[in-house]
Length: 497
Image 1 (tube, helix red, strand yellow):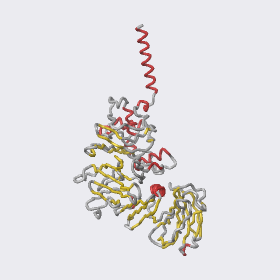
Image 2: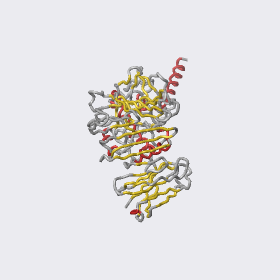
Image 3: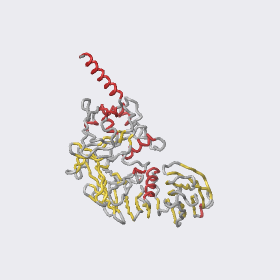
Image 4: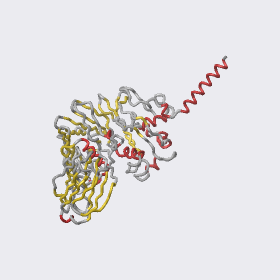
């Protein structure tokens, strides 16, 4: 009888061992099938060979980290551990980690992290590759950068500054459209997975107020002389009455911490009223109000505000930063009823003023333009009323012309002609195509007499920068069949001889 019991016990243990060994690592991860954590639920992260995490082995910490830049703190202990870093390389095909968008509790301190819907992680590196090898790759190698920034927020004491930022070097290819894995890698490298530019849910949506406002996502960066700008996570987003707030905490590793500290708190709040909403940016006690959102590059400019000392707050990728160094920029939003106005002033590298202006815009229009601007990354300015017609601008050679797009209800709406300076660079005209345009035709009219008989190159791109057609035509007026085009944002580039 004793032998039989021992045999059955041994057999049972062997069966359990087989079951456990057959499981994937994620099967043992206690929260792998959950999409949230309860408030106050504690998850302690420790990383070494002997410590388990809530019953899971150390390989499962790998998944805890990968889901979206921090699953608790990105501790120095964690990232200084060579086994952890090697695990990332030895298990390059871990993907489909469940997203968790919630508050976490670590010793009574709460942290909020926003993340993408699903994180697919693949370094495309073979086991045994070192991070040094990856970091030495070309910036557009098949590896990518992912920054883990864990911000701990104490409801009583404010921000805790005991966490660090760790960046895996190397970038993904900058053309992510045709490769879903590469696309995600590129998104993470660009903005830490906070915003997905290729999906509508990319834009923040605040719901617990009178009227939800979806604002194009902001990030906050700070820079000082000689430092690489850090990238941040939204640590808290909430609404109080009609005020929307996104809170950031940035890590400034420049060493210039004698007056603002190593960690710089940032708050962007949106106050929504019946007729307008105001963007307020608070930086270490300094508040920029009146709907103006202004910032500085890393040049030594002190015009506004005083003593900002090359610190900036900026909207995410609204411009080509390397061509806009050293000049003041501003951003102004206004909401009237269900429409938006948007004014964006900046100066190019020669400090020549360029303005982008939209009036009476729908949210879809702004969102579409943002998607285009983010992906096409042109540095030519535009001026427009929101009728689907855009004007390009440049420095020399006058040209009068207009592009007719389609408005929100599908009507072809011509706009008044105006003088447009044009040099040898192309005239970029963006138009928003809504469903059911009246005649399925895009009209282009060039009224400058010198161009009436010249052969011009017309190129049509979609919002992802893909060329749809390119052809040469002569004559001041042209028509393009757009019946086959899907709803979206397009750019017609007219290249002069």
